[in-house]
Length: 303
Image (cartoon, rainbow, N blue to C red; front, side, top):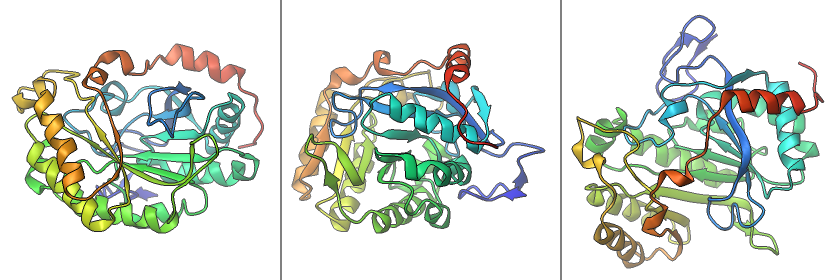
């Protein structure tokens, strides 16, 4: 079957060749507790992350490019992915956090269909938002918390940084579908989010004007939206085409973004210290360690 799952519409048979995402199915690169998400996502329990290799965006500033642009990891069936979800739940984490899932959302839906009735913790869908609304509808009732990015507003910026001139229209349509599925933000007695949506935006050096346009849209859409305004960018690699990406964010840039957040009427926010812009917070992607871990995870579901 030819793949047109995401807005790239590659129309390729992924059994024969790869499209933009550079994968032909489920490839997992990391399964681990992650402690550095928003407080209501990771808290003290940690978030049970499952990282998927490959990506349909390939942002020039990606800090996980080791697995997004050059995919590696372990290829799995939907049944084996369901086994992993049960294992993650048994870790005692706050949620199951699916990171960069867009290009295999159909297989993820299949895995969740198998396991959802056995899950007592929320499923978090952690996405760059370059998603088709119709693909997201397959996840309706399976995902509890949406954690979408709204990366860009201006088409010239999204073209330059992700070769996606239609990003804003696609992403905002996707975010509206996520909100339709989860219309209310709910938190448990410990402060962990159990249902709803948090929109993330990474403030980039020299692109403050675009950040303000993103915040304008979010405020116009719903001033009650939870927004995570991130300052964690650092240059994971040297970019000769966009030299502005070769430095960290200036303090005054992030301060201006935070002030603008409140000026447009947004009030549910998460903010970061500039000290978060370091490699120390990046996850490690080690195929051999992952292979050993998978050997220890019981097989519950049949292919």
